[in-house]
Image (cartoon, rainbow, N blue to C red; front, side, top):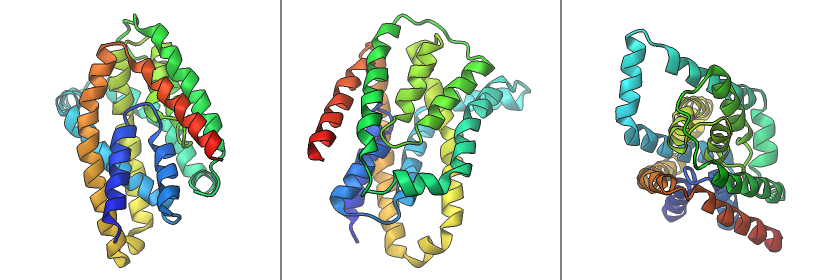
Length: 259
């Protein structure tokens, strides 16, 4: 059992899921370093389950309020979450095999350079939206932010980075953009986790060592992810979100010269 490797994978997931630097890209690079060629998509989704739990804990009060609103007959927020979740759900269902084959193979990672260059540009541009004041999310805005989330299925394109960028582009404030970005992650992570666990239940039950390794990774990603959310909120409050573009550019250079 390689508990240390899965703890490190969980730590990297927790650090990079919420920072706009693409957790998928980092996990792919780390799996190649550790030589973990099999079960890439299962590992990816399992570790995302840990960061999903950190979202639920971090925003438990807000989530509770929205659930109460829905129960009391106000379905507006539920509808914008559903609309925002549709694009990624469709792409995930229709192209699961292709995504797994082409984008989670540790021997085929050259496309990461292009993704990280694109991400660098988008994150840098957010410095020009620091004065945004918008707080209302329309149905069209929810759908457009959802399309950005769907694009981030590709490793190297940060889900949080793309959704926050799109929300800012549509006029939302940084605070509202961050909040909606992670609310939008909840249904897609619940769905993908449930779907993948159901489709691989025999493997997980038969290979108990692999299951235990995943559980260790989930725990570490939860602990680190929960801590990172506090840090990210402070960074956003101080208008320093665009600083992550420097890191993304450095990853681009490292990956380029490593190949």
